[in-house]
Image 1 (cartoon, helix red, strand yellow):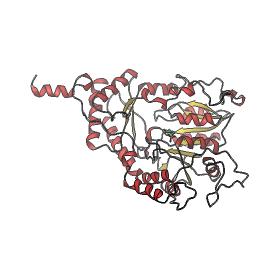
Image 2 (cartoon, rainbow, N blue to C red):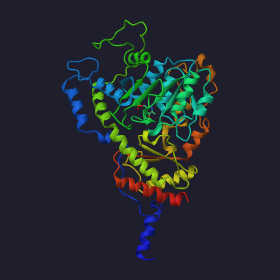
Image 3 (cartoon, rainbow, N blue to C red):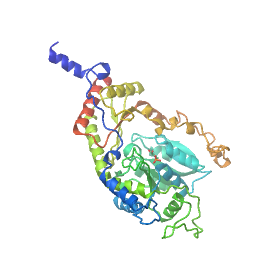
Image 4 (spheres, helix red, strand yellow):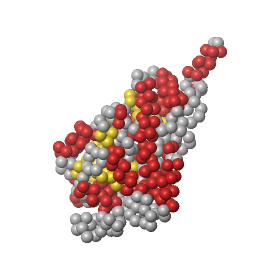
Length: 440
Ligand SMILES: Cc1ncc(COP(=O)(O)O)c(C=O)c1O
């Protein structure tokens, strides 16, 4: 063999089999908003510190960071009401309580989700009912239609991995069947479908600003609604159970609004971070979306590789490329080969994974759900007489065939918000190189 033929052969041989990897430097961390933290965040947070006023409702020199964030959020995404809170998990609990969900009720949840989605239902005293997903990796409208029953009070549509699925259809079913729709937009800040922002399809929408999200303040969240009645309850619930006066003091006088709060206010420091980050959100999501769709366009012809369906690519925020392979063994070998080609992040990051490695994003990987755990000694909500209708509900693997199949055969690549053209080109080269051998 000539030298150049040997070199060519070495470059074409998979790195996992001793060939030359496509790249030797790691890809950036996947944390979308964190890469963009800079002077703007520093300036707004410093203002709060200089004013010695980190509490949102009153203080010596209030900077109104959370107020401004909520107003800009409503303007940017077309919501009537937005309320900053301390986390997405708290936001989900607030949503359940705002809709008066409790014992005797059932909430439909997808099998591809995050543990917080189930814990909000269980802590409300209600029963989660699993619904299968479709090729969008979100609620399958046909299964929603099938599973709505006499105890169903709400459907929780979780817009997973950066993009909405068939949300308009699910919203229509909910309207027709008289059940509430909660949208979990934790992973989709800035996303839309057919020009309509996520969080505006249902009764209540929630967002998270935890470190892995499209924009971040480390921790934080938002609750949105178009309904005045719900907003009043949401405000009381996120705080101490009561509304506030114009002076920011608790108002116990309204007999219609005397509730139990969850203590999930957003601080002005968090509000300042979020405000700076939300102003960058269009840039962050544009960067991820354009990198991801370049990659999709360059690999979509590969036989044996199926990409997740995204009904409206313009509304995708882009942080994840979801791929489906022939079977579990192929998915394992495909991901191992990609990692060996250098398609991996720095130590500790989760850049390139099989879907089976994606932890509590899958119902069957949530031990407290599978084992029906309780926070209290009486075993509630599972043991409550009003929840006896759900005694037979089973949450172990096998409950949702489509979910189990996509978990088995799926692979996930995170799309960092700071990929360079060279990074994108390396990802494409690596996927094509690995596919030629593994998917042949
Ligand atoms: C789909 C989904 N829902 C809810 C949450 C909870 O958000 P947080 O971590 O802010 O509590 C997350 C993220 O962690 C999530 O991915």
